[in-house]
Length: 58
Figure 1 (cartoon, rainbow, N blue to C red):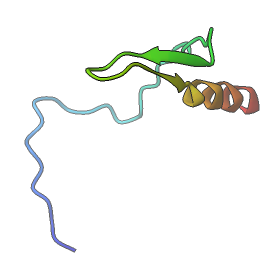
Figure 2: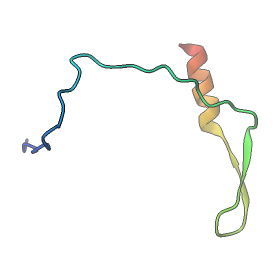
Figure 3: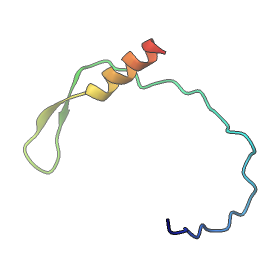
């Protein structure tokens, strides 16, 4: 396997991971209207539902 040259870090990383607890996105609707540079369309917000189900599972 080839080696990868990483850039020099200007600081020393923490010896243990730092975890921040943040609130998940609230889901007030299952669909959203998207208006890009073309014809507007509706999109399902499936990711928000999956995140909520995963949170409940944990």
